[in-house]
Length: 560
Image (cartoon, rainbow, N blue to C red; front, side, top):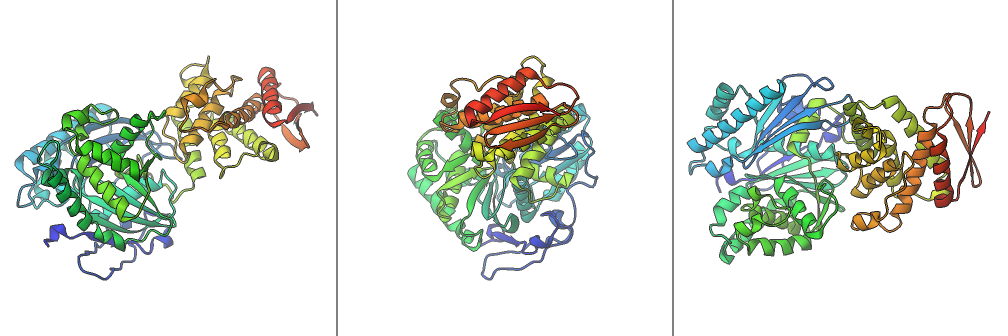
């Protein structure tokens, strides 16, 4: 076995002593016994004692960019950031240099590969100049990392593109993927798999912290080039591919993510699989982050894809044409991993290395709870849109107080999902005014369905969207369940109406000074109002009728 074929494992047993998963000192290191494992020393490397870029975290609304030169694709993302919450992308560009396909027999990056990589980064450089972005973090992964002539390539990139390209080690690549997931999905005891064009990074997470990681040369493009010569592939090619993957995945047995682990997938292959399955099932939402893929469905999809030509695959709904050729090899790795872990499903993360680098740039604390993720996403959205944050905060406080006071009447508390949906809806109920004030509640509802909001399930942010649409007195649209049958349950319209009624009531009272006081006695919610601007009577009366009809709660306003 050559050194290039040896899987690498990194251990992070000291993560729990750090203030955040980024750390401020190198973690303790240990090596599991057994041949075939190589330990990386993280001293002075990115997530142990430094950052990808030398600059400080960007000021709010000062743009910064992340370039990820992967083994298959290259992506440029320009971000803005608020003082709280995740950054948001304001521009993205993607190209397909496919560097791992330009590796020569001696492991060197070919002249065509170097030329393609440099040309891609030159185009990214011009885009950065057009957008006026100077704060750039550019990284390269396995294809460049493994090339003996990587130093010459990095030097050429710096000379011709004015970019400082950082080559990530395998454990750094794994750590950034972890940070991207951990900042957008709640983690406990999970196994993360980041499948790229050149390699597979697998991470064991315990109690929300990264404990150890494994790097394998099982990238989708690499395996496609090595095993699948025909279109569609022949049975013997598929058998050789699956046999190779099964042997190469044996080191996964050494990773321990706990008894109740989830398997979470990161990377373009996983996202493509989610898009295909959503299109196949007529899933009503376009969001793949947090979507669940069943192993048995992926097995059926593998049979279909492997028997189809690339031309046929390109016509499949949801499948990006630039991944049609390599998706069979990528899906074989995904299924091999799921089978190795006896996993019945795969949770999709839409966030990975780029979001991890952005997370480190902003130095936000991790791990975060679902409430912190959702609240941070909502507050960042308020900052981005310029909506009145003080009013939003007042409406939030009133909405949550009504929710808590009437808890016995509405009986909503599915792991806090409904309360969190109300909190997000109350913070963002006015974002639609950035489009136009007339009809702004409907605009806000659309905004919530479209904006990347983390921490909420697909059901949760749909409830938040419906509640926000009711903030100006409009009822839940008819046929809602028929439009979202695989997301909402039959009684969720009533749930959304209760949340919307609480929000509408709070919106009617949100600008009163001093703050109104609530009191619950039996079935009656009494609101004590002292002076100030009178409440919005139309909203108040309609919300009162909704609360009476949906929760049998009578609302009375009493001046004091």
